[in-house]
Image (cartoon, rainbow, N blue to C red; front, side, top):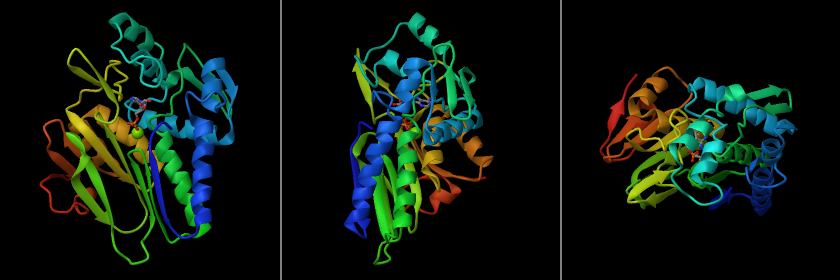
Length: 298
Ligand code: AMP
Ligand code: MG
């Protein structure tokens, strides 16, 4: 998944091996560039019979795209390629190139009948905005089944806790300061299993003529989303949900994201604005230690 992953397990080393194998298996299945992955074969052939698992993830991705009114869009790959974010040279595309790609994206271009999927109009799938959260969720389930006491997974910006540490102490998960990503701007403390997924403009970007272009694209404009947010962290039981929503809320911006949260009951979120202010929804606010933030209420 083109990122650094850390896995810490309180339990047997066999469980650690099982997680490693599971991560490689999912990478092979879902990677947009891996030449034998379901996604790659579908993008190349326009039509493919997906595995049960990829078909199920696609159904979730389509549902989350609808729910977020297209802010999360699993068909953005033509745009991602234009910008050169997964392969090739990173560059600012011309307006007509962007427009051509924009004409091709959107979930209305996906036809899914069970495991049989057809892509229309040149749309191409990219699970980059959801795969790490899905992988974290799968690994958490695997670890729970294996009976480990506790585990902490960090899959490139996606954190998943499992259980509670044997000494009963709380998990402490830092949120990177977008201005200095090696440092935490805030810390969340809690016990038990939780997915915490951060999407940030600082995570992957390039610069051209002094302007920074990051990898989270606004499916309306084709440009890196400029919503006034520097990062969004979503907390949820489901890693898949948290991952799709972190990307979507980043695209929406603070006001629309807060409104979206008010009409939902399955996640909490922390927003860092471009000028470094921290906003936390009620359920996230209670987990934040002493840092200055503003609470978003129902
Ligand atoms: P994340 O880091 O989870 O926010 O996902 C960003 C990755 O998802 C990018 O590197 C792209 O591969 C893909 N992506 C970019 N913009 C979007 C979007 N609006 N919806 C879905 N996936 C996206
Ligand atoms: Mg995401």
